[in-house]
Structures are given as C-alpha cells and as structure tokens.
Length: 260
View 1: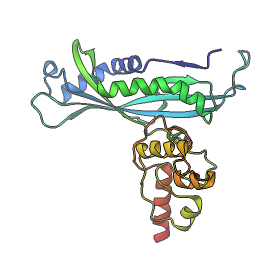
View 2: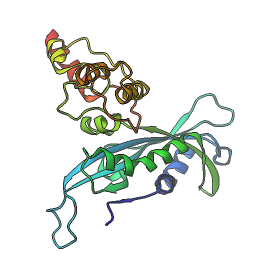
View 3: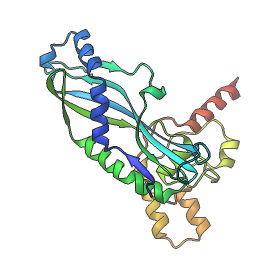
View 4: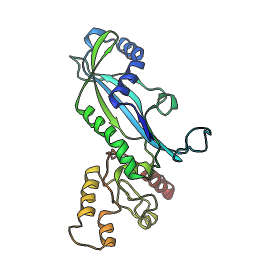
C-alpha cells in the first residue's frame, strides 16, 4: 500500500555533507584557511530537481502491481562556501564538478504517482516543502574534520522541467492557452511576437491570482475569470525563482534567429 518512500530532508543533507567531508577539509586547506578558525559561516547551495520517471509498471515483472507512473524528487549539493570570521568575502571551498550527473544527484523522495495528479503530488511533497522552509531559517551544526561547524542552506529549484513547474506553480496543464509559468503570454501572442517577452510574474502573484480564481470577487463568467488569472487554477505549493525558464530561452533564441 506504500505509494512513497522518502528521507527526512535534514537527514539527507547531513548524509550528503558527510560524504563530502574530505572535500570540505581539503577545500579549507587549499584556500589557506585556518581549519580551526572556520567553524561558522558555511553556506551550502542546493539545486533541487523533480521529474516524472515515466511508466514503471512493465519494467520489473514479478513484484506487486504498481500504478504505472513514478516521480522522483532529488537534490544536488552545487557548492559550499565559507565566510571566515574576519573576512568580507565568501570563499568557495567546494564546487560540484559534474552538477548534472546522475552520480551527484541524491534521491530524496520516490513516489508512485502520475506527475499530473496534483492532489497526490501536493500531499506527498507538502511535508518536504515544510522541512525545506524550516531549514531556510535555521542552521545545521555538524562535525566535519573533527570540529562542529555551522551550515546554512540555500535552495534553488532549477531542475524542474516545464511540465513539473506548471504543476508546482498551480498553472493549467500543458494544453493551456497560456504557455508560460513566468509571463502572461498566450499561444497566439507568442506566435505573433517572438521578441518582447519579459519575465513578469512571481510566486506571490500566482498565489494572489489563485485567490481571485477561488473567490471570483467580480462575479465573472468562467471565461472572463480565466482571462483575468491567465491560467492559474490551483494553489502553488513550491516557489520557483524568477530566472530564465525554458520557454523564455526558446523565445530568446527565436528572436536572435529572427534578427539574423
């Protein structure tokens, strides 16, 4: 009856950092930092990824019957830096040499769920998001190289594909008239204008639009309401950074070719 197996987020991060213990100590040594002086001020950049793994029911005969889709949520330790007591600038002591490799990507949660099943996805990932939010505000003290050291974590959710981001941000599925997670373009507008597409939307604004969708304060028809909220019909449950997404990258490339 199990549909998901997962690690607690903080436990998984401790495990990942302990795996990197030698690299951290080596990085301190190479930066010429006094090992014993650097016990505070460590910053860890985490890249998260979440993606559907497709149909898994046919791949391993002999076991129990499982729902046919699986989703994996995982993270990569991208870099570790330290701000020494009397210094002004952070020094990076570890950078993941192969950030997109399967080997550096640590699974956090495996779920038997279709990635477009929003309710189940929200229920399973909700506790992970809560743990992640708690860790943004706190420090982890961990023994590295025989000394207790204090780490802070910064999370970047840049490893989601477009379809997954739509789920996380509460947008309509990929057949929607509105094509983008970060601006209000419709398909028609994007095909007419390949140049002027700026990133105009934040996670907070998506939440506000969801409230409008939910309450319909102006008593509009469904079509008018959809046009007002631009395709946001569910509550976002994970923030995405307003950096360049795949669609804007495509439009940017198209614009360059258009100029040529």
